[in-house]
Length: 420
Image (cartoon, rainbow, N blue to C red; front, side, top):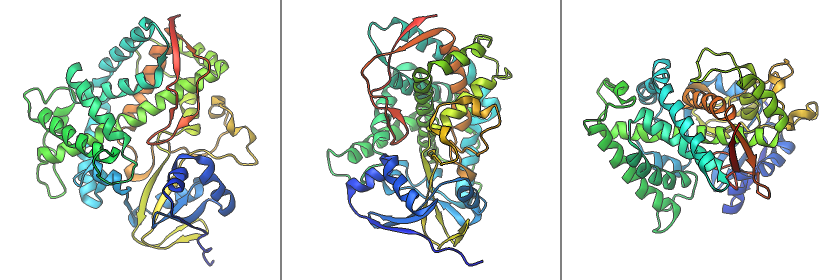
């Protein structure tokens, strides 16, 4: 069978249009509606193939030997040349094996008591607040505190200093990579240098084996040579992002969905009230699992991921020529035969009516490193907070989502909290 011609939408040359393409789902949706689940465009002179849908994504991931990782220039520079995100082949695999030890089952068991303590502290802080609190902002601080405390072993004062620079660095990840003084990218590059200096100091200090850092001992690169501190510091910078951004987004979107759908919250609470605290990893929580899946379906923390194909790949009936950047779009889409997909209905994951495969943290050999930690934090936060606190939304706020770098409510999800 002859492969179909790769549909093309022409060039997107303006900066505003390019940013709209990534920030406004409707902007890209119009092109999918016209050209199907695979189409090519040009963004600021870069040829990019956009794909979505289970068949196209499955076909792509089956051809992993033809693919390599790819990031926009701003991300590449801010992560650094040593980062496993910017490596391919054995260099990527070696560093992923090293950093992956921080997210093993044994490591997660070690982190759980500290995470539960942080959940309890957040609950106390929310109840003590004298005015409405931006819950999304608190979730960001919580997610960072988890990775900085449980993995890096940092005390609160050192953690807060790191967080300030980290937020500056994060905000410019997807930006125009022009280091002109005063621009977000220039500020982010300066923050990156300070972050690396702090992370190197953590590795070199006598207390550097606190948290989970002892698990990195003996890490080897692709040539079998121990990783030096500069290399490890860049891996830890990626680790902070992988274990923080996706978690903060997922937590904010979970509570946003529940507070906007009180009947679902009531349904979920029936199960959570029977959950023990401290939470036991073996506890079955089908309603909680279904609720988290539904949040991931509607607002995946990773809206998409990039690959570059070193050789031609076949996606359904469409052949994508070699040397294309492929943007996999994970955000949900509505089809004519599934009118209720716009509704927040976790029960679809329990009644067998939802058949699609979800990849909320990306897929393939480059799936988000922080996936397991994020899932643990989400479960602990849901059980620890929802069963003890009654959260109320402040009126007259914007519940729409800012999508870059990960979905988060624009007005911060303002809430007041009281004990149940």
